Amino acid sequence: MPHQSINAERLLARIRELGAIGRDGRGQLTRLAASDTEKLGRDALVGWLEAAGLDIAIDRIGNIFGVWQSHDNAGQLPLMLGSHIDTVINAGIYDGCYGVLAALEVIETLKEQGFTPARPIAVTAFTNEEGVRYAPDMLGSLVHVGGLAVEAALATVATDGTVLGSELARIGYAGSVEPGSLKPHAYVELHIEQGPVLDREAITIGAVENLQGISWQRVTIDGVANHAGTTPMAMRCDAGLAAARIGLFLRDHITRSNAPSVATIGTMRFEPDAINVIPSRATFTVDLRDPDEDRLQGLEAALADFLLRVAAEEGVEISVERLARFQPVAFDLGIVATIEASAKARGLKSRRMTSGAGHDAQMIARIAPTAMIFVPSRDGISHNPREHTEADDLVAGANVLLDVVERIACSGWKGS
Ligand code: GLV
Ligand code: MN
Ligand code: MN
Image (cartoon, rainbow, N blue to C red; front, side):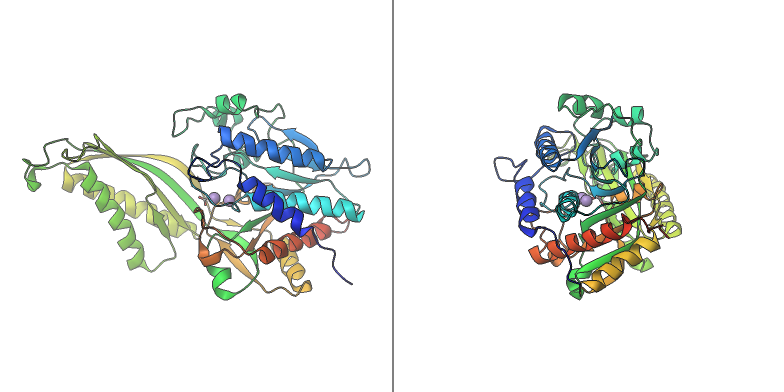
């Protein structure tokens, strides 16, 4: 039987259109959560959801839902699809947006085909998935599953000093729906891989069976400011040097342990931040990840031990604040198998894989059967304007999502 397919041009045009929203004077794309530029992206998305005839709901944490439901299926829990449309700084156009727009495309295609789903189907764009402006990441989906109280989430202070609740109100996306009211029957998130595996192996579809644990910490080192020219090396309490030692330690420790763990120091600030003054303070973030919880705990413990050692050896004080901690997640094997079967039926190569990136799916997996579909990222590049996925792969991924949705939204699907 020939497969129905999504409208490739409509999907690709919307990805380009959303990708043009939020560019600065230098052409860089930055749509941080609840910012003015993200408001423009949200407005475009809501316009498309409305034009598709979906019922729009915005919850108190700003999560956007577009729901396709009928009289016949209104009492059923919805099949939820989606991702996020906030971005990192100087981002690519696919991360998150692809999953949201492909979900909308799938619903429009099913409507046009006259498909009668046994349950509602919802497109979701979760607030602050990236966590660049507000920690933790995946904040909107975390609130949706009850992992963080909405009041606490709304009170989150940003890296720029703003408060999330005020910013959502200011941009018009502090909704009235109580978070978590829309309980999913199942959740499927389509996303670019953001890593090198599918591209290297020339495989179109990743059936994502698990997602690694994430640990975010902010480290503050207090030393003593002093003259860069007159202070002998042995007499320094140099917060900057101590910070540099920690970065090197993490790389060497992971290399020596031969584990798949990864560690990143993505932000760093010195005070007083002057060329001829020894830094009195270094503040930086540490992002640790590993698919195995015990190994991730081991890495956290090794870092904690090393901080004590550096504090003693460099004559500095070190304090640590936890910003996010999520355990590794195993996805629903029934949905993973449905993804594999759908890829096979379309003649697409697939493989099971682990997600290296964090996703809203890891939160929703706490309350409903969940899995993810990946498509290749050229050269494994993401969180970078060079992020790219071939149009054929974007369309193939959306068609697999279409088939998975048809199977799950039929009356017979019970989950695994
Ligand atoms: C989200 O993009 C993350 O994995 O940090
Ligand atoms: Mn993403
Ligand atoms: Mn991202």
